[in-house]
Length: 149
Length: 149
DNA sequence: CATATCATTCAGTTTCAACTGAACAATATA
DNA sequence: TATATTGTTCAGTTGAAACTGAATGATATG
Image 1 (tube, rainbow over the protein chains, first blue to last red):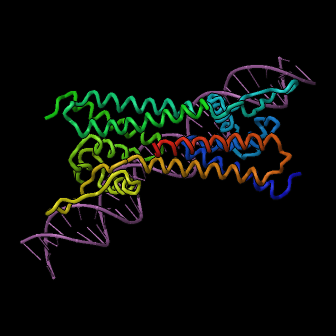
Image 2 (image 1 turned 120 degrees about the horizontal axis):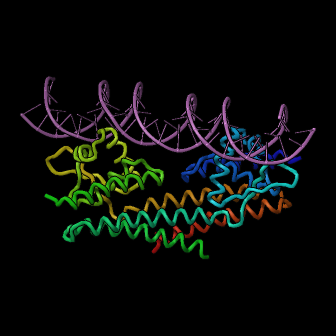
Image 3 (image 1 turned 60 degrees about the vertical axis):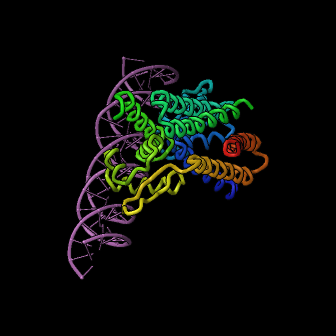
């Protein structure tokens, strides 16, 4: 059995990671699932997740599939058991970074295309659009740098 | 009068920037206001914004104040007029970056504190928490690098 | 002071994504 | 084959944030 202090740290971390994840534009429950899988070595079963987090099986299904699609977790099975188990993948945060990268790239392209379509003599607009473009480009480069470190 | 092509580029940019901004967790209208102020040299009045974007004065009020709070736009007045005017500030994206930085810092601290509160012999958890911590730290450093460039 | 012109506030509405839970599908076991 | 167990889907609900618009507040002008 875990100590009171440990137990509290666990619960708080799971909850906090849910909030952080939500602030980053993902469902809160996805973050809470991640929280569990970060903390525990043994793969967690579908039912255990549902029970531990007190959310419906439907929600577990949706969010585990989301995290699988993001390549952050993986599904495993145990011999002689029908249940699915989940655990954190290697380099779980790579695909998050890749998502940010493509978003920055898209945004940059939107701005670039707008700039090209506007008259050259809109000097002010051209300047400000270039600044915005630079912002997205810099951000893109920075996030590239993280993954390639 | 603007050419048809120019007009379309303007409308599309404003709309797109609204969507991008929303995807980044801010209200869509804030992004659309930004779009207008990026494109036009002359300060836009409160009423002009409301008319151009076809949204209520209440929404303009809320979102201009948000963008002011983020130091992305500034409010000006013209002598002999009571209306408020708005224009893009210098370095409009600095405070966005600062926002990201503080969020990354907070997240990193949450993870760090959790790790400290957990037993040392939870080896796996310690490792995975350190990885997550590294993710936030790297992201923080990268965003620092952008602003200091 | 009365009126007009603005910006702000806030209660109500709308909207949209997340979540639930029941129905369904798939698979194993008796 | 019948039953049990498990994951998925989807229609409906919920909840939270954004938006509206009328009321209010503030300020200038006659």
